[in-house]
Length: 629
Ligand code: 28G
Image (cartoon, rainbow, N blue to C red):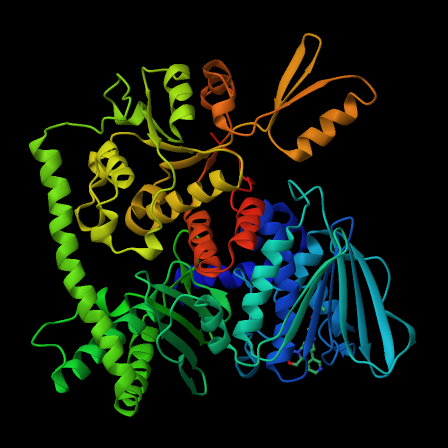
């Protein structure tokens, strides 16, 4: 046994409610919004497992007005019979003991599982109140807990003809920084689960706003890919493979579109492996090899070898595997480390893809043509990149004309504000501390990287200005040591267009300058929405919530409320005070998670009607939950 396995087992045995409450982060990742939402996933995962066992068809999630959560499934109901080891009903053991049941029982390994896959007892331990109702044996059994401890014994409360399980929990305010569930966060995960587990009906009901969504997809991953590719110009039917073995399951769906970006989503036991890993490596190598082999055998490639990136241009794919003992690694524990998986995915995908190409020569031809074009464009991009590089070499340190640089030469101390619009740019230039703050105004929208290839992107003035200002080069030429500012701050209006520009920029950074995000150099500024004034008193207000609270304090009294529609409405002093002054400003540090979310926002919303897209972007793109400067 490896040392960490030994530790893991020891923890499993020793950990009780106290341990969970003492170090909640160890079990659910964080006590911020992410951990809060994780509680719901952990409970829902139990229902999903019951569905995968073949007994549950419907799951309901309800967000109540007080942000308590109810989850209901129509499975068999958690067993209530006596557990000999603990001499307690099985349901009580499951609710109070870490990892009770399942895990070491290889036949019934838990295939579903939240990011941390820790079990429902963790949710119970972190809830000020937790109720379970089990419908089974024509009876409703009930037990209540507080902070993980039973209030009373399990009892029957009435008769019923139904079967299933219902859980209601109130997250503990002593544990979580803030208790406010976001409908959109839950709904996108539940939608994902519905895609990944075909046929299951999952609904989400929000009692705070009366919003309701229901997800059910008979097509599973095929529906998932169709959904991702809506109006994106797909040129063939979704390719779908599945392989079920004793301790390994694989499902994959692939479809190419006329766009230029790739979108691969990978899941292990229903967990979104954002950081990729062995399964993704296997998938990619199978794709490259199989396409090249087919192209050669059918004289389609004219001696050219298609690169790995070329064969994925415009591809949307979802890969979902299920394995008994996944090892998750990486910064956010979303990278699959099991090395044996690479070869398995590779060989299954190679075999299935070869058969598909043999049977569908027309589609095979179209995909190879697309990859050939990509290969040629890559060559053009290389030249364009070189041009940008040579230009900056030739012109020495010639920085973009619009850039107002700072005087300090130490990148660690320097900040670059990328500002929407010339007028806000003007204010920022006047308001800044020119010692260490540089300002680069952008005119209008930057290019949507989804819709263009790199060579065209490099023709865009705004993008070239950003790259030259940063000093790092781009894509294969990227060199982080040349970065001229360690804080890159995106500053846009707090309206739809501002949010849109911020997302375009984030998507561009994510796609072509990823290490900047990975190393924590990218931030979004949060300019205030209002200024409130009452006599001599005045202060800036960040959001509607804060506004409501402050207005309540001044109830009945006359105050002046100035609304800032855009950065341009603030004078240089105001802009400095509210958004640029390191002592007072609010910055959101962008993580890979945020960038993935921004990228996904595009993936999911591209090509849809403009109005709902704008609404979505405004509502969700720049929600600030972790504020740090
Ligand atoms: C609504 C909120 C969360 C669940 C079930 C159903 C069974 C079960 C759950 O068994 C113990 C360990 C492995 C068999 C299983 C019922 C077999 C027969 C179940 C839920 C016993 C756990 N009858 N539904 N657990 N297993 N729903 N929803 O938690 O060997 S948890």
